Each structure stands twice: as C-alpha cells, then as structure tokens.
Image 1: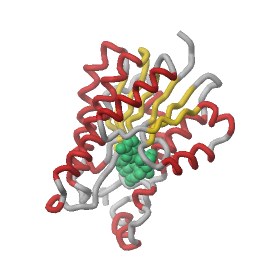
Image 2: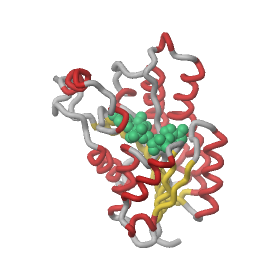
Image 3: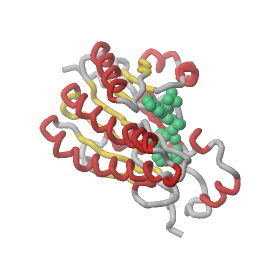
Image 4: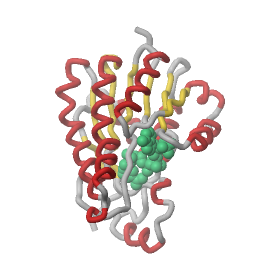
Length: 247
Ligand SMILES: NC(=O)c1ccc[n+]([C@@H]2O[C@H](COP(=O)([O-])OP(=O)(O)OC[C@H]3O[C@@H](n4cnc5c(N)ncnc54)[C@H](OP(=O)(O)O)[C@@H]3O)[C@@H](O)[C@H]2O)c1
C-alpha cells in the first residue's frame, strides 16, 4: 500500500466544495489526486480548473456527472474506478434547494431535492465503501438548517437533518471497513447561493448571527479539512454558524 491519498469531492467546482478542494490541494503530496465532480456547468468547472496553479491542476481530474440520479452516480463511480485503484477521502458536498414554499412545491421537486441531498450521497458511500482504504474518511456537508427549523425550504431542511442522522448511523455500517464518517453543519456561508439575496434579507440574517456576518468558504473548508484529517473523529456533526440565533 502506498502513501498516495485519493480524494473525491462532489459538487467541487463552486462555493464550499471548491474551497474544500483548494484546501485539500494546499497540502497535497506529489502523488495525491483530487477527483472533482460537478453537475451541469462546464464553464464554471473550466474556470475553476483554470484558477488553480499548474502544480495543483496536475493533481485534479474533473468528473462531470448528474448526482441527482442513481444512473449519474453509477456512471461517475465506474469512471472513477477506471482512473485509480482506491479512495481515501470522500466529501459528499452536492446539495440543492428550492425557493418554492411547501404549499407550491411540486412532488417531483421534493423528490429531486431529497435524492440529491440525501439518497444519492447515501448510495455513493455504499458504492465506494469497498473502494476506500482502512483509515479512510467520509464527510457529509449538512446544514444548520437541518439542526434548527428556520425559514429555508422544507425538503432542504428535512434532507439535511437526515444527512446528519446518516453520518451518525453510518458509523456502524463503515466500522468493518475501518472508515470514519462525520458531517459538518454550516450556517450562512458566502457562496453563489446567496448572490441574489437582497440587502434587507442579508441585514435580517446578520442581525441573528452573533458575529454579524456570513461565513467564508475558507472557514468552512478549514473545518472540513480538520474533520477529514482527525483520526479519532467518528459520527460527529460539527456546527459552524458564527453564533446563529444565540442573541
Ligand atoms: N452556502 C450556504 O450558505 C450553505 C449553508 C449550509 C450548507 N450548505 C451546503 O453546502 C453545499 C455546497 O453549497 P454551495 O453554497 O457551495 O453551493 P454552490 O456554490 O451552488 O455549488 C454547488 C456545487 O454542486 C454542484 N451540483 C449541483 N447539482 C448537482 C448535481 N445534480 N450533480 C452534481 N453536482 C451538482 C454544482 O455543479 P454544477 O453547477 O455544475 O451543477 C456546484 O459544483 C450544499 O450541500 C449546501 O447544502 C451551503
């Protein structure tokens, strides 16, 4: 067994996922590889790749695949298995939401959110657990919206609450493989998700945060890296929200 570390980050070309990829690359060894999935936006993916240094870019392979479907997930894992012989870190970061109120939300949209945020990540772990090495680490990006019922989309909050439970429950499933599994639950983080938020809405949110600002993707990525690396963390859900609703 060599010391090469292979990582897969889903939804890694934007926002939190991209920051996690950069953080992993920042102290990656010569042989380490980072496989970065994204869904639809090829221009964004190309832009992310172009923003990396030559040294980092050589370690990266993009894996476009629609992770809202089981077929898309299987296509990605098949391709990954042709590219490398093992995986060490798996970051399930892809997540979607909806602006519709529950009263207006079509059932198909509920299903798509739950599939993308919960069901596909669960099956991705099942699919890759025998491809991961003992000592491997799985990290789910949950959400503080799954810890506390605030005014986000209902299926988003429900699916993220389930992701936190999934992270705890998978400890038993992954014990025979020697793989740790944890989740982090970010509050409001500055990503393209919030690009169209009005000034009033931002002020309302900032007034509820003890630090009076959104978090940065770097702050979340530093935590993600610490949790992925820590050999004794297993089954933990770690909040990062600047003191939301503590006022
Ligand atoms: N931003 C926040 O305030 C916040 C707070 C708590 C938790 N989170 C969680 O953090 C994670 C990342 O959020 P973000 O704000 O960084 O989002 P983002 O900037 O919109 O990035 C989302 C990433 O996921 C990919 N993606 C979306 N649908 C996909 C699909 N069907 N298949 C594969 N990839 C797909 C996107 O690629 P394409 O665009 O190419 O599809 C992109 O790379 C999510 O799980 C979110 O729930 C975010």
